[in-house]
Length: 105
Image (cartoon, rainbow, N blue to C red; front, side):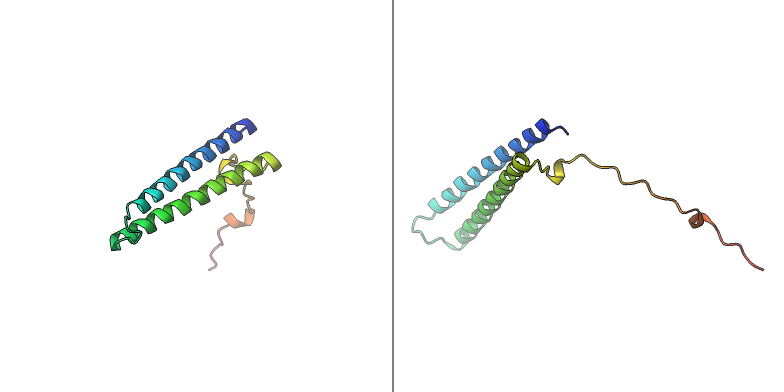
């Protein structure tokens, strides 16, 4: 994969992560607004917790995407998932490994 292609994929990943984070933030705010008294009911506690977990996860994904793009631009570091697959080294054959022992007897 050429450098311009890698840069484009990293920028797309960052944009996708940013959109996901913004959506998770909006959802979290919406869940909190649904609690009129500020004290959620038992099922509301779970909704707040789940929205919070998704928001935290989305922020971590955004941070990871940002760091990958920054490391590529600054240092030329290509993330593992974007590196070209490398062929494993050819296996060395041992001529003795294919020898069947003779029976004595």
